[in-house]
Image (cartoon, rainbow, N blue to C red; front, side):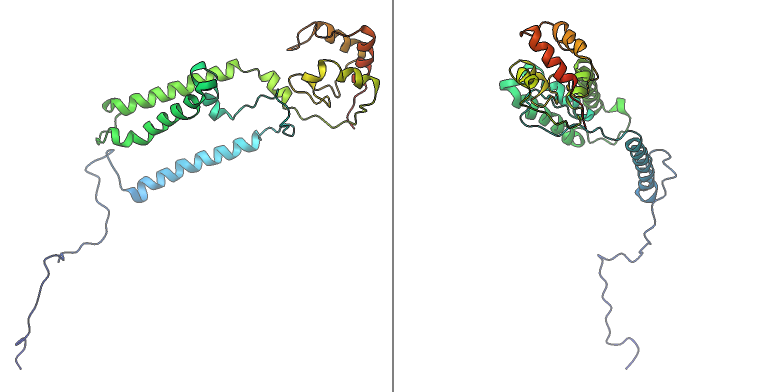
Length: 254
C-alpha cells in the first residue's frame, strides 16, 4: 500500500488554525482610556477598598457605637433616631406630604423612585464617554440625589433636640424604690410621673436618680423649670413638694 493512498483529510472551517495564547491586549495605544481588567483595574479596586476598610475599622475602634438604656415598649415618649446615613429619610418623613395619611409616599414611593432611577442609570446613557459633562442625564440625576441627601441630612441634624435625645437614652443605674413611701405616693399622684417615668428612669424628662441635688434645689426646679422643663408644672401644696423633693434627693443607685 502506497503512502497516503486511500486516506482522506477532512478540515473544519469553524476551527481557527492560527490559535493564539490568552495574552491581554496591548492598551498602550490608548493611554488613560482603558486598561486590562485583570490585574490592573481589579488590583486598584482592591487597594482602594482596603484603604477604606482599614479607615472604617480604625473609626469604629476610636468611636464605638453608643449604648442606650434597655428598650421599653411602654415608653411612648421615646423618640427613636436612626443612624446618620438614614437621617435624610428620617427628615423626609417629617414633612406633611410624606407623613401621616401620606406616609406611604415618604416611606415607599419616594425612596422607590430614587433607587429605581439608580438601577436604571446604566440604561439611560449607554455611551462610552466617561467625562461627566459629556453625560448630562446621569450627572444631573447624581448631583440632584447628592444635593437632596445633603440638604435633608442637614435639616435633620440642626432641627433635632440632641440634648433631649441623649437624656432619654441615658443608661440609669438601678435603684431600689420603695413605692409605699409617702414621697412616692405624692410622685405617683402628680404629673411628674408622666415625664420622669414610673421608676424615675426618665423619658420625656430627665432621670431623677443620682441627681446630686438638694431638696431646696429640686423644689426650685419644680417651680421655675430648667432646660426643656417649663415652669409652673407643680400643682400640689408646698408641703407635698417638700416631701417629694426629699424623697428624690435620697434616690441613689447601689
